[in-house]
Image (cartoon, rainbow, N blue to C red; front, side, top):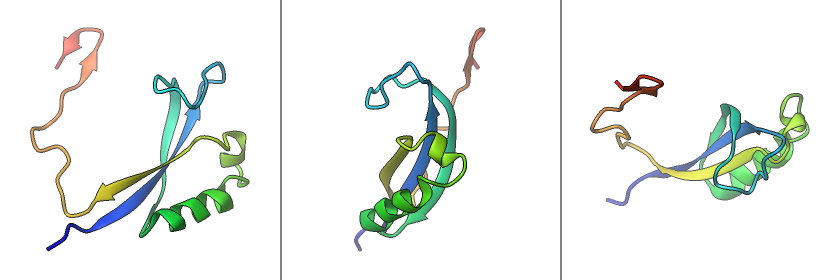
Length: 87
């Protein structure tokens, strides 16, 4: 059976002094903007959302990623890092 997949659309507010195409982006906030059945549906959502309040202030902050459904993403748990080290 082939894995089920979808697309997750995220929106980031990125620091103004950072090129939004860089990998080392300074992220000020992150939002899940939606889940879509195809890349085309996700791209269409970007076009609809980019002029809406909040999104229009950061029109290039959208990122669309493929995801596999029915899969755990944190199988080994996760760690928190802070100034005191790993907890």
